[in-house]
Image (cartoon, rainbow, N blue to C red; front, side):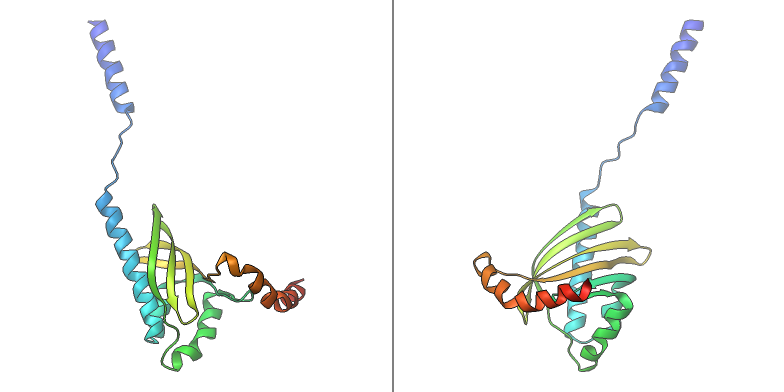
Length: 170
């Protein structure tokens, strides 16, 4: 009888120690990626339509926007202040995603996208976080794309301004 109780007790203990594995639901991931796609597409559309409030409501209050110029590393408040005159003119900028990759882990997502812009093809990348209201942009980086064959020409064009910029940050 003691052996039966012992076996039952050990079995009960082992069954309670069993690690439960909950399979991830791919449909939830697809829904989240779709929500992020809609957010980013609407964010770009808000700039094209000069919808200042919608554009900045897609970002967190501590977000960062890094532009194409080496000096453009804006916190949320400074980026709003910089952008306001463009939005007030009725059209800020028009970026259309032509390709996008989205990656996720828990309540953080990161992405990269190719954009059709007035500057030609650009690359955007960023980080989003999910809060009770949904996804929001925490960090965005806008970069010009330069074909590898043109790097030397671009370096020559940038040489003087790069030198002045490096002196200004020392």
